Amino acid sequence: MKDIMLVHIFGLDRRGLTAEFAGLLAGYGVDILDIGQAVIHDALTLGMLIRVPDNAQPAAVVKDLLYAAHAMGISCKFSPVGSKEYTAWVAAAGKPRFIVSLLGRTISAAQVAAVAKVLAANGLNIQSVSRVTGRPGLTEADSGRPACIEFSVRGAPADIHAMRKDFLGIAAKLGVDIALQEDNAFRRNRRLVAFDMDSTLIRVEVIDELAKAWGVGEQVAAYTSAAMRGELDFRQSLARRLALLKGFPVEKLSAIASHIPLNDGAEKLVRNLKRFGYKTAVISGGFTFFGERLQEKLSLDYVYANTLKIQDGALTGEVEGEIVDAKRKAELLKSLALRENISLLQTIAVGDGANDLPMLNLAGLGIAFRAKPVVKEGAGHAISTLGLDAILYLLGFRDRDIE
Image (cartoon, rainbow, N blue to C red; front, top):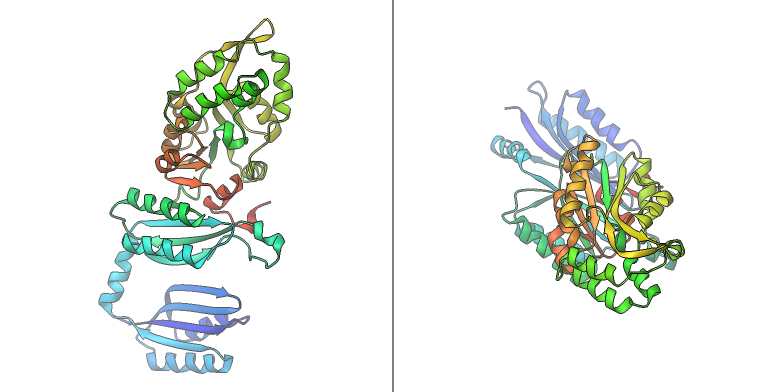
């Protein structure tokens, strides 16, 4: 077997450094089996796994590289790699890969240490770490900017559900969000994002807003909270709440719709999804009257929700047609994937309530947004510290890509 060695170059970064060293190796006909480079605050680390051909002398290669490093004022180290070690390294390429995203307002050493400890305990090896967001400033104005770093890891965890639970515990304790995704072709090729509407794309529950205007706010809010926690069947909850709204004047719906606030980052997220060619949909247990206005405002592609039944200019306290409940949400996501001719693994679903869980679990990436604990645990991925636009980081986009 030809001589294999690991070359480790480190020091102050300078233009043309990689070209210089690669050029020296080219003169000996060297093969580069692997290469990696990182620069942090002008400090460079460059690693190359090289194979020296039979007609070249390894000692001569080392001598020339050391001379070049000295002339540039940097350091260079060499480690021989045996055939067994190299074969084991090649075999490791078949292990599963994952991306772990750490998101927050700041990234602390305690957060990184906690994540790394869980990864090590589950037999996962960190291959690389990179910052997805831009360089943080030092002023007060910069303190509200999001921060995200990615760990690229390799290995097969014994219990991925237990690992996700550990990450949720760290997230709650340290005020950060942690997402674990399999690093595959689908992760980089999502095509459709389906949102719940109430408390997801918008900041409120529409039915609660209607109830406040009708003077039955407390009664309806109690049913809403029970349904969100999964303590009450959605269909039962919807029927009880709508019954309290019987007689509500239709003419007041538009005024309420005009004052409903979007959730943090909603416009930025949808605008960028459209830029990159994603299809967007609302699949909601809320109402089409409000969903269609949201569709117009955000240029969403699809809206599926419940249609309020109206008679003599007032709500009857019922809905028309099939109720969009938890089961129906999952069915609608399936049908949209078929309509768009994509795999379910290319879909993303975002929601906050228990009735969103079937849809979140069916999608290739299910995200619980500012959700109750039971929904966070069931969804596998959760965002609580940042706005909806943080989803762009989970899709692999960096600050420089985002408008």
